[in-house]
Image 1 (cartoon, rainbow, N blue to C red):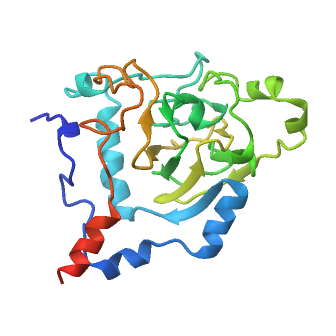
Image 2 (tube, rainbow, N blue to C red; image 1 turned 120 degrees about the vertical axis):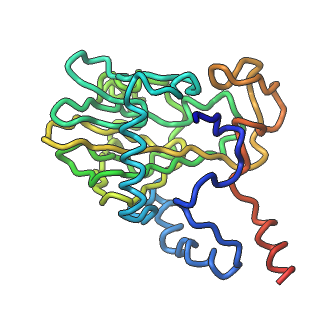
Length: 261
């Protein structure tokens, strides 16, 4: 039976273990040197997020979602079997690049697509479901670009290097890409202003990934239009929340449980 999972704000399967023991959260805490690297560069790579077993389950789920006849398709706020502007390339909605003709994701800042919320307190987690390499279209970052101003929003799956034409002169010399190769199950995190993109996949295997976008509790709507197609309006100035923007983690929960043990 197909269910609308936006109505559930708790785990719906046993795929991901949940623990509320305070000591268990400590193993997920980033080291100070990792935080310092993020503050300086605007991204952090190589964080293990999924086990091999979890990757396999998610790959199987993704295979079903890529079927245009999927019975739950009507629950997607958008569904694009191909978002590439190049007719010879394919980029599926979850940043999946099929073998041999996987398209590019142009250089962009994530916040340019989220300016309808304020203030900027957003973070992107990119999770690999395959090993990602230079050859199959791994992520590339521009270190330090999280300190740049907001730039115009490009066509996300259009011309890879189109943003270079509109960069202010003082930023062109700082446009120094760094390729971030990851193993399957590893993640990278980046600031919402960090410039990033990925090139084509011409290898004989797919390069699949998924992305989670989060923002700090307290971020507000900055629009009186729907934030996503089919989602009720959150009036400008109101706190983000509700069915489609659930609270993922509240440290007060951990503190409360610690006090009760």
